[in-house]
Structures are given as structure tokens and as C-alpha cells.
Length: 306
View 1 (cartoon, one colour):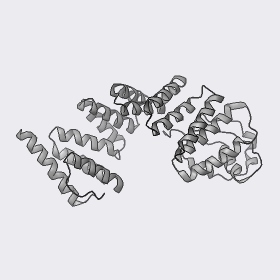
View 2: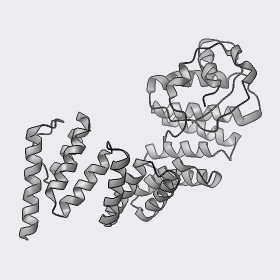
View 3: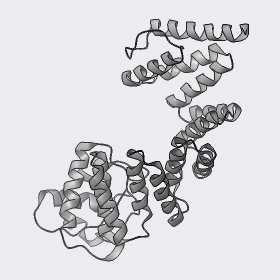
View 4: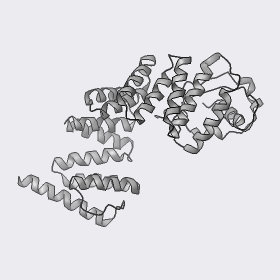
């Protein structure tokens, strides 16, 4: 539930006077439904002032929109310069919220400063470790990210998003058994999360466990038909197994639900494996289909011939 910080952030960004408000904070994105709501509510502050500190959310969501992030940074900065109550670690939460917005603006150094300040105020604040881990992941400092995610999990054992991100970081480092363990924990908490199956299936693929990978990719696609990575990775397994028609069906479905930039990336990757010999134009049409199907059939023929 969105609190009075929604109203307060707007008022703080448009007024020079200190404003009393409640707070709240949030990749993975797991928390507030939409960062846009932080700057959308324009109700007068006094209408909710009686309940200004009545409820305080525990988490905040990653802000992916840079224009909204700029407004959040401005509002949080004004609030941090205002007299704040001691209860609820409001200052620490505002710092995390602003640091999260800095991440959206690619201002990584400023984000780190805010997360570190929040941890000095409250060293046992799991969200601070989580978002600092996200910042480390952006910089591809996966060992440091894993350390932060682990600290967040130690403080909050049911922190599903931290397990997910740590499992992804382990995957980046090719520590696949640890990656699958974390992602299995995520699935235990949230069996409806398609991305967890996709990532675990990818880890299984690298481990050579094709059977388990296919099961995970199947489940991911059942939960979310737009899981492009699941379809593409499943197609690669079918290709290796000499099943060109199944591989083609998955490749085609993956292309159809992808944007031009993504299609071009897929074309490049397939071209490296000699699975595609067409143009790298980011367009999926009959010519692309013909080239893709022809290459897959050729590979299957050569495989059986050998």
C-alpha cells in the first residue's frame, strides 16, 4: 500500500518549506508497484497528516524511468534537508530511495554513497545491502554483489529478490550449483515466477543437465509465454539433440515476441553458431525464417550423417 510519501514527495519538490511525512523505500523491483505513483499524487498533505506516520512500508521498488527518477531525487533531497522524525529509520529509507533513483540515472557513485550512509544509520537494514548489491552487479562486481545479497538474506531470510539476484550473480561467475540452489529457493517461495525457471534452466544447460533444463524452460513458458530467453535456450538444446523442427518453432516464437534491437542481437548470436546466414537487420520475416530453418535442417542432417 502506498503511503503519504506519495503526497509528500510532490509537495517537497514544489515547496521550499520543510514537510513532515511518512516514508517508504524500494530490481529487482520487487516492491512498490509503480515508481510513477511517487510523483503523481497531488492531494494536499494536511488531508493525510493525521496518519502521516501511522504506516511505514518496509521496501521500495527499483525505479527504471530516468525522468521519474530525477523527480524522486529532488524530492528525497529536500526531505533529507528537512527535520525528520527519529522513528522508523526514515532518513535511512529516504537515502535508499534516492540511491535507487540514482541507479536509474546511472549515477552509480552517488547511489553507493546513499546506500553506505543508510547502512551507517542502520547496519541491519536488509534493503540497503540489497540495493548496494544491485549497484555492484551493474558494475559487474559480482563477488561484492554476492556478499551484499548474502548479508541481506542473513538479515531477512525470506528476502526472495535477494536470493534471485544472488543466484543470477552466481550464474555470471559460472558457479552454477550455487546458482541453481538459490533459484530453487526462489521457486520454493514464488513458484509462479517465470524468470526463476528460465534462469535455473539456463544454469542447468551450462551444467549439461539438459533434461532438467527442458523441464524448467517448459514451465517458464507456461507461466509466461513471452519468456524469450527460455524459448531461445530451449531451441539450442533441441538443435543439439537433432530436432530441427522443434528448435525452429522455439526460435520463431522467440523472434516474434522480440523487439527489433533484440532480434538483431539474436541474429548475431545465431550467425556465430552458423544457425543463421541472413541479414543482421533486426527484422523477422519470411526470408529470416527460410534461412533459419535451412541452417537447422542442415545441422540435423550432418549430425545424423556423422
